[in-house]
Amino acid sequence: MRAVLKTNNPVRLSYAQALLADAGIDAIVFDGEMSVMDGSLGVLPRRLMVSDQDFDHAMAVLREGLQENLPKDGVA
Image (cartoon, rainbow, N blue to C red):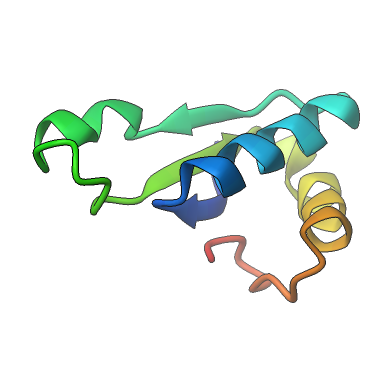
């Protein structure tokens, strides 16, 4: 699994996950429960992960959908 997005913005994370789901790409949020560790402040970023096989397609979907120039390694 590889990270395609790293953010502490829950709206951005949810939107990115929806974009991937619409493209038929399964994505899993890692570190979603870390808010317990940071006192629910949302300081610690969550990672959106996809399979290695879906990585390139997922990055293309997110670049277009988020209209951002995401890093090639997928962590933004």
